[in-house]
Amino acid sequence: MKITSLASIILLIFFSSCNNNEQANKSQKAKPNIVIIYLDDLGYGDMSAYDAGTLNTPNMDMLANGGVKFTKGYAPSATCTPSRYGLLTGIYPWRNERAKILPGTAPLLIDTTQMTIPKMLKAEGYHTGIVGKWHLGLGKGNANWNEKISPGPNEVGFDHSYILAATQDRVPTVYIKNGNVVNLDPNDPIEVSYKENFEGEPTGKDNPELLKMKWHHGHNNSIVNGIPRIGFMKGGEKAKWIDEDMADKFLEEAQQYVKAHKTEPFFLYYALQQPHVPRTPHPRFVGKSSMGPRGDVILEADWCIGEFVKTLEAEGILENTLIIFSSDNGPVLNDGYYDDAVEKLGDHTPWGPLRGGKYSLFEAGTRVPFLTYWEGTIQPTTSDAMVSQLDLYSSLAALVGSESRAQDSNNLLDVFLGKSQEGREELIIEATSRTAYKKGDWVMIPPYKGVKVNERVDIELGNDDVFQLYNLKNDIGQQENLASSEKKKLQQMVSEFEAIRGESFGEIEELELK
Image (cartoon, rainbow, N blue to C red; front, top):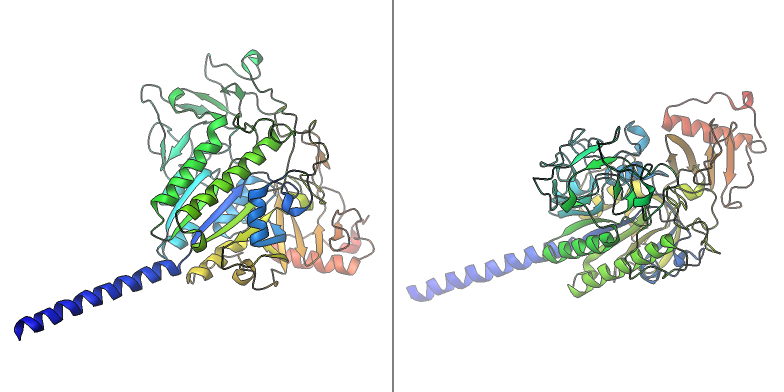
C-alpha cells in the first residue's frame, strides 16, 4: 500500500512537472520573435514592390507582397543618427539637441536610464541583439578603443551586440563585439581623431595614388583598404574590416544569433550598411545591377535578406517571427565618392514619385519603404495608413503585453498587423535640425533660410523663405505650393505644429506667401 502511494505521488509530480513545462513552452511560443531589418539610405523607389524604380528586389518584395506594404511609412528623420534614435526610443529626435549625425568618436547618445525597445523587451523575457550599423555614439566621448568601450548598445538594452561604431565611411573601421574591438592586437593600439592626422599617416587628400575609390567631397582623410574616410585613424591593422566582406559578415552574425537563441523569444535589430557610401559590393555582386556599385549593393542587401529569411525557415521559427523592414532615410546618389551612381542611374528612380531625398524636408527624405511580415498571421495587403518608425516602440510593447509606452510613439499594433487602416493623424518630420508638419494628406514646411539645393549631392532640401503647403493626395510630387490659396488650412497647420514643436512663426497674414 505504501509503495502504491509513493508511486502515485511520483507520477503526480512527474505529470505536474510535464504540465508546467508544457505551459512554460506555450508561454514562450506565445511571444513571437521580433526582427527589425533596417537599411541605410534605401529610397522609396529602390524596391521593385513599390512600382517606382527599375531594380528587381525579389526578397524584399517577398516580405512586401506577403505582409503589409505601407505607402505612407516614415522614418523620424531624413538622416541616419536621428532616425535610429527615434526608432529605438519612440521619441522625436528633435527633442534631443544632440541627435545629429555623429562622428565616430561621439559619446553615447541614448541615456542609459532611458527606455528603449530592447530594454522594454528584455523586461518581458526577450533576449536582445543588434548586428550591423550602430551610429548612436559609444562611451563617454573620446573612447579608448583598446579597452572595453562602455556605455554602448549593451548598456541600453542589448544583450548581444556586433556593430560598426558609426558608418562605413567613418573611422574607426573595426567591428566591435559587446564593447570590445574584434581581433585587436594589443601591440598595435588604435588611435582615432576627427581633428588632426597622425604623423606619417597617408590621407586621401595627399596620397591619391593609394586610392582604389576616388573621393568627391568630405571623404579625404585616413585611407583604409584603398578607400579614403572621414576622420583619422592609426593602428589596429589586424582589426580593420574588409569592406567587400561586410555584408557577408553581418549576415553570418545575424544567422548565428538566430541559431543561438531560437529556443527563446528574441529581438534582433539587423541594421545593414547598404546602400550607404562607400558602396563596396562583394565580387559576387559587382556588375549585377548595371547601375554601378549603388545598384549592386542594393541587390547584395536583397540577397542577404533572402538568406536570413531562409535561416528563420530552416530553424523552424519563421511562422513565429514578426519581421519589420524599413530604411533610416531617403536616397542619395553622390554622397562623397565617385562611384557612377549618377552616371549609371539610367531610368531608375530611387525617390519614386516623390520630391527630394536624403537631407530633405520634402517627402523623399523621410517617406521610405516600410513593411511588416509575419507568415501565417499577417495577411498580404497594401496600407495607406500613415505610420512612423516612432510607433514601433508602443506597438511592440502592446504585442508582448508590456504597459510601457514612449512619448511620441502611438500604439498602432492593429495597423502593423494589417487589421486596421487607422494610422496616426499627424507627424513631425525632421531633416538636419529643421522640422515640418504632416496631418492627413497635408504637409506644411515652415520658412527656412539657407540654400535650397545641396549642390554637392544635388538634392532639394525643402528650404524656402516662405511657408510651403502641399496636398499630397493630389500632388504627391509637391509641385504646387498652396500656402497662398489655402490660408485657413495653413494657419491651422501652423498652429497645431507650434503646439507640438513649441516654436512660434508669427501671424500668417504678416508673412509673405508665395
